[in-house]
Image 1 (tube, helix red, strand yellow):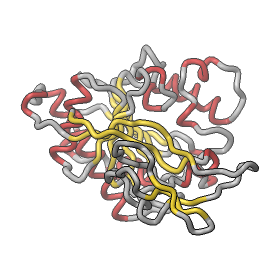
Image 2 (image 1 turned 135 degrees about the vertical axis):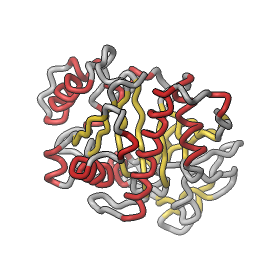
Image 3 (image 1 turned 135 degrees about the horizontal axis):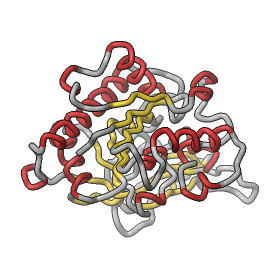
Length: 290
């Protein structure tokens, strides 16, 4: 039973869709069909929102490991994480049954639901969302146990993220906002069905899920400067198959660098602006059935 649900926007202050959705639902109320759910509406990083930046000092969405929460770190986001952990958690013994954290990406990932586990609850959720929102992508990040992630959503007993793009940082696009609203509503529809006991795993059709692989970095020279950019044929091709020998980078002297793996992969977070300083060009994934 999901007795308490926290919907969060503004974990990153320049990702506007979740922020606007929370504001709208605060002003006008949740859709009437969700009246039986206990949903709190939260803006996480208000100072970053006011400054229209992703974060002020450190990425808030990496501050929620047990080690980070225990550290004496005086950075703004580290201190905020401790406050949010007390408000929504505490992690590992949470008062919140489900945290839904809403994000935007500059990558062309459409509406993506990110789950961190493959237990029965999350399989049901993934299948339900994909069934009722066929255009949705499901991304599975289970490369580590749920509680080892540093994401804000792990302050809940269960936690998921909604990631929608492509949308520039600090910009609100109508199409991206509407996709965000739809995925949030479908997720809450699932919560209603889950609480009513009207949903079973076997009754939902299995769905394609993209399981996170690894990050692929930009090529760098000896001084740490990039020697290539994302190839135009890869740009905006999130969740589409990338085959061996297909180009992934174009060097600044006009040469192609190809995908040298022996197997296909499904790239996503392609050329994500927030990962510029990390030199991450994209992440890989395997396609599985869940």
